[in-house]
Image (cartoon, rainbow, N blue to C red; front, side, top):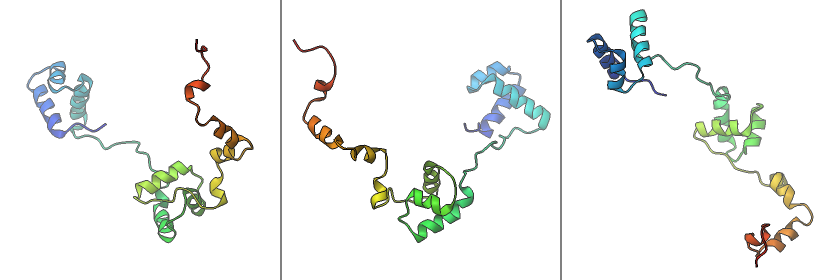
Length: 153
């Protein structure tokens, strides 16, 4: 959520100082009455009305490794995420690594070539005996004929 502008803050306080109630000011400027009360309280106690800097910002897990990521991808642009993670020596999910690469405006190869690229849940299913035969035997049938339901009359 973005902070409300200084202009709005000043107008809200000016109307409050002119005698308008908190509820009237909040309706006029379409802000919550709680926000108006907190703004007035903050000016009274601290003397400031500017928005505070954001707190609790998450620091990206791989922010310390950005330069090394750039270096690795400059040297070998066709590294996959798994290979990149191995070379970095960090224990993070591939999705975390992808977010860091995307943040840097870089790209990576989607999958490696060779036998290791066939490893995965889908390829394991396809290599089972009889799976491809079952698939080819179901081709050409409409999906409605395989659904259970009342028999046609």
